[in-house]
Length: 337
Ligand code: NAD
Ligand code: LMR
Image (cartoon, rainbow, N blue to C red; front, side, top):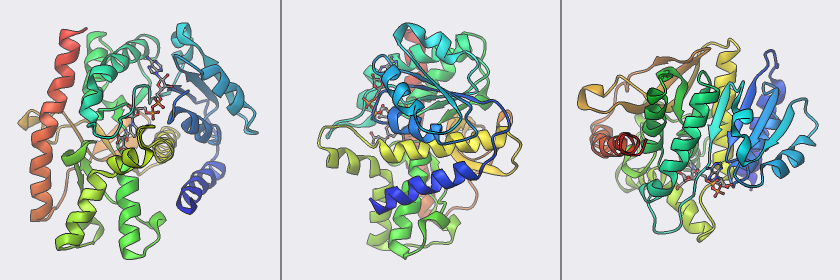
């Protein structure tokens, strides 16, 4: 509870110390859900957001009415099912947490059959109504839903690889929090690089780049906790869903970073799953590494950098899984346009 309050406080402090200069419409698709509601609240607290457009197949007008009473300047509107086009028109950022969450015993890939078509259809709406927006994919399996979105944008002739992001920020948040618990440091000062993708073995924390060197069982337990942190929450919620509050905080952090970069701040870097040159020679078109953000979205994709032998083994396992996840998403859109 204290950690959650601290994280929420940090988002609030950052938000209130920022200056809103430009008009920035931010849309949330899936705003009525477990992530969508707290994410909408955190975005309402961000003065860089001037208009908040909330869409869901159920409940968005209610969430919008509720959030709109928060005493910050932004205008909030809720949109119902027939209204996705109005929600998206003029959006600079579109966050997509729409889709079903896991239950105990499921992998993220088990969500593919339901979420692939949800994301495909929302991507079509975004490609038609706000082709230049930054699209932030939260719905799982991220390793496949990001390629799905890319294929949809390509099919409409509006794909800009610099504007599509798989949100993996929660992995960085977890990696940073968990190392702070082991080392007794302030989590606010930790920002562990996590590369690869967003599921199990594709999540590769690079502790060595933060100057940490865990050994043996402690190292294995740490890596496992970061790679399977999502399962920890799914188990604890006992069938009532997966991470929502920490994800909302992570999504709000990533949106804030994009807005800062769009409004001219330099050196804004986040790990995110993007169309990346790093492993294209191995047939892997999307990869998460440190990405510098700018007014046009992706400004610069940083290389993986120096890794230990152990981290290299994790990376090799990651690449193997990632390739299949990406191909599955691409194939889905080709077969189900
Ligand atoms: P939830 O079931 O609480 O909410 C999902 C919302 O999406 C619901 O309100 C539902 O009505 C809405 N929805 C469904 N189909 C829709 C459509 N076609 N258009 C608009 N809205 C639609 O689920 P949640 O806990 O909010 O999780 C949402 C997704 O986010 C899941 O797929 C989950 O696995 C994923 N997730 C990702 C991360 C990450 O790190 N990227 C973290 C946590 C959860
Ligand atoms: C997470 O990492 O918490 C999310 O991807 C949700 C999940 O299914 O674990």
